[in-house]
Amino acid sequence: MAAPGTAEAPLRVAVIGAGPTGYYATEALLKHESVVAEVDLYDRLPTPYGLVRLGVAPDHQKIKSVTAAFDRVAAHPRFRFFGGVEFGKDVTLADLRAHYHQILYCTGAQTDRRMGIPGEDLAGSHPATEFVAWYNGHPDFRDCQFDLSVERAAVVGVGNVAVDVARILCRSPEELGRTDIADHALEALRRSRIREVHLLGRRGPAQAAFTNPEIKELGELADADIRVVPEEVALDPLSRAAVEKSQDRATLKKVEILQGYARRPPAGKSRTLAVRFLVSPVELSGDASGRVTGVRLVRNELVATPTGALQPRATDRFEELPVGLVFRSVGYRGVPLPGVPFNESWGVILNEKGRVLDADTKQPVTGEYTAGWIKRGPSGVIGTNKPDAAETVLCMVEDLAQGAVLRPAQATAAAAEAMVRQRQPGFLSYGDWLRLNELEVARGKAAGRPRVKFTRVEEMLAALGR
Image 1: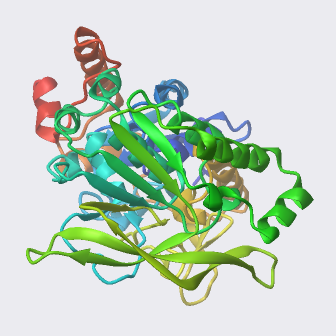
Image 2 (image 1 turned 180 degrees about the horizontal axis):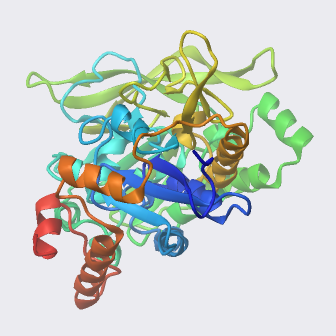
């Protein structure tokens, strides 16, 4: 039997997860000069793009333009998309092993980390990921409920996702109405009575994870004043020494922007966004009905670890912040896949440079690979996944050269499609997605918006006449 990787016998690869990493890996495989590959991209949702469609904030349309590059990848004649096909449910690992030489997992980090404090499960306390998925029209979160009738909300964390949540809560209906935010979220946010949003960071301004464009944008909201406590953005001696030593221009600029906000007088806008530092939630309080009524904060001070990193240490000073809604955004972790070795402590697939490792022997599992957040953990931005995917694809090509690939019984595109049609006859092809995309954009054009999304799978199928 001829070795795979030629025009006569292409390397058959299944990629699980149609987010940016899945596309970057697919592109690297299809463009590889010494390997002829056929790539089938699977996603449990009917639509592609992963977090670019369902995670990037609706008021950040420029970031979403990366999908044009993904569509060019998808136009390759040796590419196929199977949307609405769930790994472990519609198709199993055994199914893929019977049809592909290699399997690549690119499923991201799908759940949030918990704060681990009393009251975290009170009504009105939510993972930020759920709110983001809701306002972006993710079918699984379409019917979530968030009490926007309260006047104060807290967002725990100062990464870009936390900033997105705070910004969306503070945007005016007119600003949101120019985006592709899901219709149900737009209507709910129009009726929002929230007037104060508190963004809470446990370390200081120099350690905040948000980027400068994100924090700058918070000072430009049409109907929300930004409020910063001067003492909280004054650098402590350790932070000042670290910043002066590194001379990192981005960090210097970040601190400069925040200290500028601390000097800015309020402009009398209808909402206030308070950005706080050196505070950690230690408990959420609730009322008799089990709803959040406040968050107890402890003031922190920064101390140096043996490695030189600055970490927060709680003091004996506390404060009570009355809020009726809390979103936690303190990190994300991957979800185990059926039959795939998993590192529970790290929340990633057990791997080395993208090669999946056997849980017992710690040796590579033939034909199985991973890339993206499910490989390395939730770090970096969309573009960070490109070199990450390239590293994994290099391992895949090296293993192919050594003959270390699966030996599927039915290694043809036709056999794989027949298997999918039998298991999930309602799957969507890339052609189906392009038609849905046209319809969404047309609906948006009629409303003066980038697009109006379909947010239910039934709606998508009906729009396609299925």
